[in-house]
Image (cartoon, rainbow, N blue to C red; front, side, top):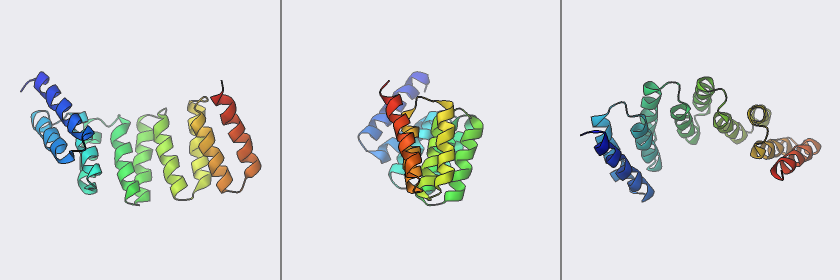
Length: 174
């Protein structure tokens, strides 16, 4: 099967995902992988389909394959971290988010994922440091300010929170 056929298979798999027919999507991604074992996006789709079926160990394995195929692409680490976070394997999730940050230090979503985990763990100061990094990368990304305000409010630092919320409002009205 040539690239055109694998492209068609990929479109078919994505359509199955959209239709929430995850088992069909998985088998279609597996066909692609049998033709192109290093197809990063087929592994990604398979992992996400497995995650949607709550087959978490298999999803983690698919996401690990993504990181083997391309260790400098953040999405495999982010996806694996997300599954580990869902499983409450927080230390392992942090490790994956750290790998994503190392792979691309300017990817705001890696910091966002890690901040979300820290908030879930009620480690608000750590979350704030992630929001600060997000703001450093993109000063106009107002959701980072809003989330930072939420974390400050959780720490009962209400005056600081109001200041940060005002920054978010100002940035969002530009």
